[in-house]
Image (cartoon, rainbow, N blue to C red; front, side, top):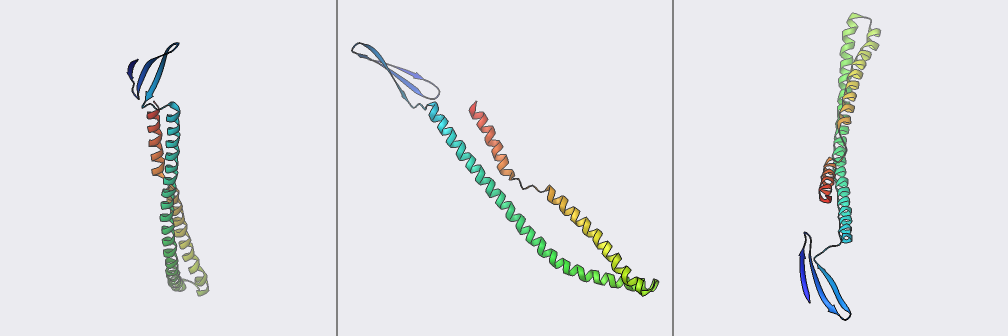
Length: 164
């Protein structure tokens, strides 16, 4: 009976030759070796786990961003309601002041409709500018889960390197 040893990168192969009636038989025994099927099965399991983790990360990150956006939206809405009430009184005072100023220059009935028209036009222009700015700011904000996207890119690169 003779034994030979062969070492490779991933395993040790032991060959054992034994004599059997009718001729020689070579029995090959593998220790520490993983088959291609096992490797592929493990790879699929790992990729599936990785994908599930990436989906969970994306959900968590999106949820966190949505919570922050919701909290800020409530704050904006509440502040807007209070500011709106204050603005109404300021506009009323501005209209009354403008009316008194115009009344000295023209008939009171002309000043009565012209003063709210001027104040309303100024407020409408300011409001339009604020709306445009808000829309522009919202367009810049991304709801993409950037950490997850970066992580998936890293995983893709790692997987490419491992498959070489």
